[in-house]
Length: 602
Image (cartoon, rainbow, N blue to C red; front, side, top):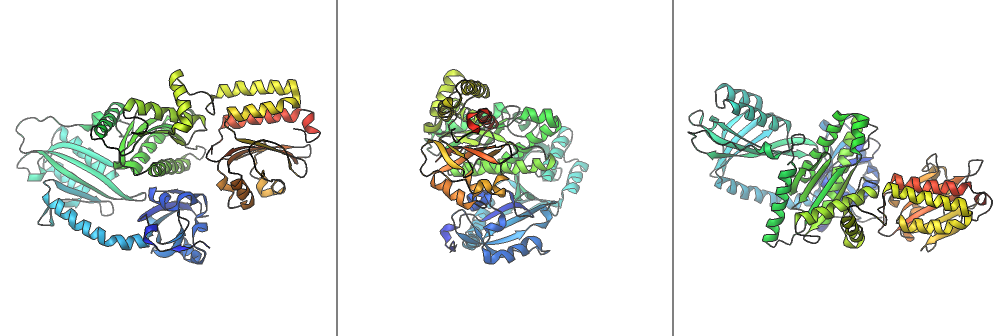
């Protein structure tokens, strides 16, 4: 039994939110949830609950009560942790259950810290000249106030819609400022992640003077639920006697997403890198270049309206998950860039990128069930990989290309040992070539050449074909199983005791993993842990981390051959469509040979 931990050092996450289906499948979660659960997100939610607490868990998600329950959940640290869990009924959609999870130990330990922080921030706010505002999504009330002697003094408190009408009716905003004021009110009401709006108004002095005001605000959420908008009001100038120059941030924004446009984000990133270099700041900054996979096909298949939704949705996920932790912008049609300026580790970056892709994938799949969202991302590190924008962008863009070639919908964080040669060659020749990063037409030419050799030389060509395949497609091992006993008749690469599949090839549940063409793709062997633990354990012992399995049937539809293409150790990959089709065509060609249908002589 895994130990139940109550130690404070195991408590890293204060609060997490996730979405599951009614059959316990984990759909998505915020950054804190992935940090708390780690790789356990592959399991069903009820499998992560301490066995003695399953009844409490069922009551939490299926009863009409909306109270926190106390139970234990399996965490990334391989322990069960005490948490408070609650179902949020107001957020439910058909087939979905929104859960809020609070760590008990951290909640208790941090209460006093939070209380002291509140007192400290009140002192800070007391020293500030700006006014504060907040909008409550439940009450629809906007409050404008300032702090004096440690207490808030309210200037305005009213329903947002009523306050908006009154300000205009009383002439506190006039002319072109009305449009800016209305747009700011819309941003507040719609819960825009962050916004800044500048306009002239006299409502701060009840009409006695005109001020140039700048409203800056951000939306606070619990999971996907908008809770509050909070912000500051700067009085940029006192009494205005002449026509001012209005600061219009729209010139720096991409109109479709609200993110910084290419020029603005490039300048912002360059400035941030230059500042870090000037200050000799050795913190790691992460530059990520992102591209939505197969976006042209999205427009062609689902129309440009849905394509716009994909772009806007991706931008929204970037804002939600990254927020003030980085600089975000759109640099092309389906291309985005982000400089993570406030990440403590590479693991943090991985968590953000995973949350961005998974959250949007589910929300878009609900709107278009046939669409599977994917994004490829390349990441370079400052100062390890470079200190200037051009150098870092070139490396991140090269990693993005590698992500595309490795099957898309993934992120590649630059590692000189793994990617340096490929990117250096790509920079020299203008594209990434060689190794595992072959272009589709290069794989096509390779496959055609191999088929010609097999047709010409028959069984004698198989050894050289498989050896070349391993070298060019980044495959560490190939095992061939044959006959009624599915014995290993041939192996290429450094296996110890190769896995045994004999029992599984007679197991209907395992055979259901193969498609109608006899193909089973295992991008991550942990997917086998729940249902096929014995084979999962054997693969772990062999250090196999991903596998492409192709079965060949006899005339009676029984599998007589199984060929496994394996990667070892840290070489886990997602098999791309081009990889699968190239290898499948080769195996089908070999299967047609008279030699293969006779004996175990592959």
